[in-house]
Amino acid sequence: MTSSLTSLHDAAAAGQAPELAELQRIFTQQRQAFRASSQTTLAQRREKLEALSRALLKYQDVLAQAVSDDFGSRSADEFKMAELLFSLESLKYVRRNLKAWMKPEKRHVAPLQQPGKARIEYQPLGVIGIIVPWNYPVFLAVGPLMYAIAAGNRAMIKMSGFTPRLGEAFKAMLAEVFDEAEVAVITGRGEVSEAFPRLPFDQITFTGSTNVGRIVMQEAARNLTPVLLELGGKSPAIVHDSFPLADAAERLSFGKCWNAGQTCIAPDHLYLARGRTDEFVTRFSAQVGKLYPTMRDNPDYTSIINQKQYARVQGYLAEARDRGARVIEINPAGEDFSGTRKMPVTLVTGVTPDMQLMQNEIFGPVLPIMEYDDIDAVLDEIASRPHPLAFYYFDYNAGRADHVIANSTSGGVTVNDVMAHAAADDLPFGGVGGSGMGKYHGHEGFLAMSNARAVMVKSKFYGVRYILPPFDKPAHKLIKRFMLS
Image (tube, rainbow, N blue to C red; front, side):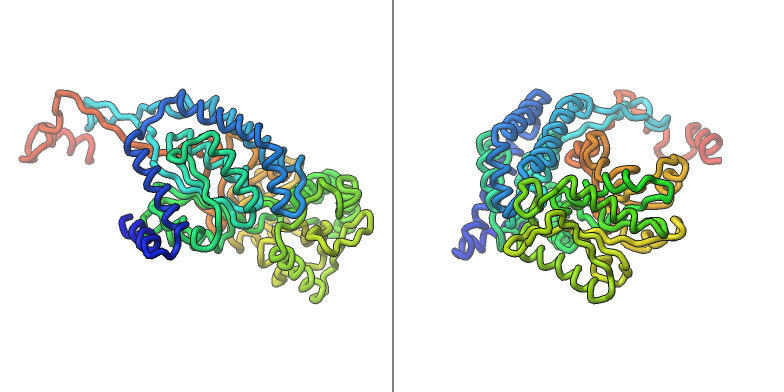
């Protein structure tokens, strides 16, 4: 802990990076404030959560415009539903359940520990570091923040350098609600981003790519800081042969078009029963055209965040074309997208496992399609890869759905829809293996930001004296006869 703070202090003292001095100042201020007042009441926590809700409502148009400016074009209505509505509903849920979560829990006391009482008390960890990605910058900042507040912590939030306007608007919003010693927003890139996870936080929550997640974990390990990593991965979707393709197209198109596919739990690739691809392409294309009859200047359809990400996705498509895949662009109005970072929703057939589309998370409006003969073979193929953040299975037969759930592993699973599990207030959200570690949302969010402190209270009567040496007392004989035989 000392070495990390000292290195930041030395760099700032040498005049190399004033941003690092500011980062250290805020962290030190929050840590000192927590030590001076480490306990907050239920009423205080609820009021802070309520104030956060009021601020989101007040700033909704400012935030929507800021994030649209960062993206080049992002749907204001989609932003408000995806980021604000679900955040506000989750805040209500947390406030409603917080009293029960904060209660100490009685625990069993074994005969050898009697007489005594055991309980768990949930105490705040201290200062939480929250690292936010660019794709859902409000939802993925407010989510960890609300649980940090619910558990009684203070928080520093590092916003993405790819959404600078949103970062500044979010910072101004929270400054109206919280003192800097309670909640602080950090913006900027470069040295600030690198230094943030090196601070000796009491916990770090990171949402982003697997590669950056490894770096965050390495930096956190220097201070033995626990991490909650929500990373993503290639989330598969399987449609059973009996499932109506009109239903599948409607639900999958929502997941692939929402935020132009720039969603960590978007369906990444699709498995269809052999011979059903052409019908699905027809139905999916019709559904996309219904949602977005135009795209280029349609305010409901979002751009790719920046040129780097746009070029990456286009590169995947170019490689697939060169290797014989069929690339189907869904462009209902036949528009020219040049000069923009918008791109048509695209289906790709004839995909092979070695293509970049199948090697890397797509994170764009592109859906590769593969055909199968046996679902168990598909499950084996998925199991051979890193565990995904989400898994989707479409089948109205509950028995088959349970079989697929039992024979697959993912952070979460939704049956007959996409992304719904992440929006459920009372379900934990997070990855497993390569898609992350730790869970938040719901009660698990409160637990993730708390220290579950074991408390044992013994009575005036000291029963341990009866089992102290020498080991030839009556109690020892009873233990050997009834408990060790």
